[in-house]
Length: 342
Image 1: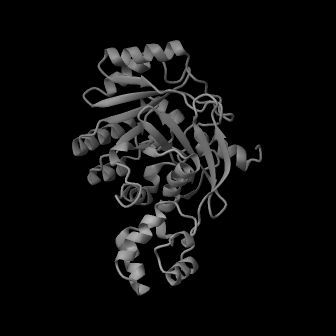
Image 2: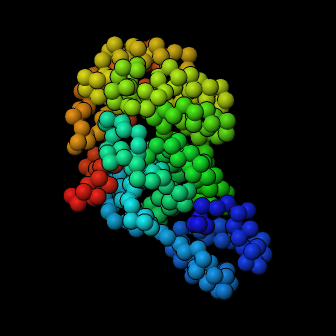
Image 3: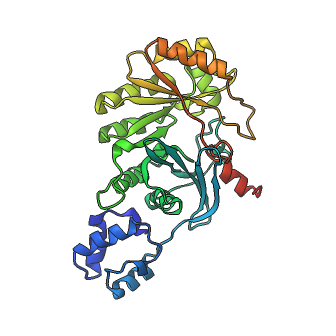
């Protein structure tokens, strides 16, 4: 058990068993969420208690085995080694509104999307809440930059690790912890319809992003195996239910892939699909993956696609490329490291 994955009431139960008063739970919780690496740093806790906690519940802080910083835009990418030796990636991106951390939710991924390096090699295991929280905490500590926004768009499918991700959101939102607003958190999914419905019931004020990447089943089936389980009509119906439950506009991520999903006809079909749904399309210049034959669309194709959407009344923006000189797209750094290329 890692204490950083527990809520204050759960910590209070553990401390009660150790004969400690209730107020110790808040003290312990606050220290853990400051990113301490040792109980010795918790100076307002009795030494005897620190010794017991150290023996029963060791603190396993991640180790930064690789750190790359972009000379172009200041983006920082970390490769963290976890307690079991597995590695995950975290990216710190600087925007005018604050610093955003993109975290991983799994070691590897089982979704099999053709354009993503994260899924090469499959799923190793799911991350625990504390391992997600540590990515935010230690990125902030190492960089010296305050984190104001979080995106769950790194390695892994967040809704495939539903319970642990929900616990992480509760912890990172806590006023006695990092206190990051739900409205400053975005979660990206490739389209697990039952989990989208489950998420809608919670009525969280996070931003939901759907990795769409195609306007029809034919295209999505080729590049996103999840579409065979949850076809696009089912997915968009779930999106409408999500909006009805939360009143939160949905973001659709659309990687622009040359000759696959970037034609004018594709843009018009996407426009028809999204009709009546409050949506924002985030067009993403495809990142090159060494093992994939897919290529990014031309700037002209991207511009035409965007104009068709906007002329049809759908807000569409082209994502600014960050960290292109530091393996900043999902899974690249981890894959190179595990294959011994760096």
